[in-house]
Image (cartoon, rainbow, N blue to C red):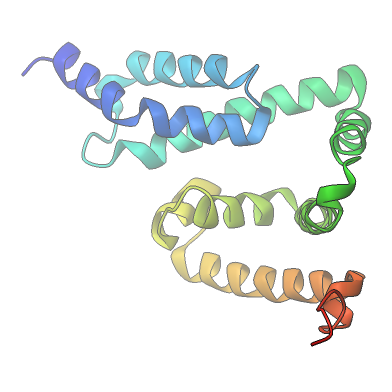
Length: 179
């Protein structure tokens, strides 16, 4: 098997995962560009590429590209302002008020974490990587990642427990019909 066949097979196997990874971090407009650039870099470095487990390497590359894109966007127009405007615009439906409030609380808690801690949580929870792979991507040992993940989970539980709950959560009989 030559390099081109191996790369094609690796591309077909992992493109969707890299695209979803980028989509969750930069949105649908920029995700295809991040995925394409990731595989362009992978092709350029294919001779020095970890072929037995390429996905963590691809995620590290995609992570670096997304961080660069985010930093560029923050300098250009203030990413935080656009995210809060988007959340307000999409959170106006009364039918989904509790779900929106819970989502906003979770996003606020995630945004309250350091970049590396947030990335570790997202790699393990959203990307489904094991702790060893996630540790490789964020650049620490597996035991360090395990400790960081433990502390982050406790911090998130604490932050989410402090959020105000809806009337239904506070009063279980609220909304139940009298029989």
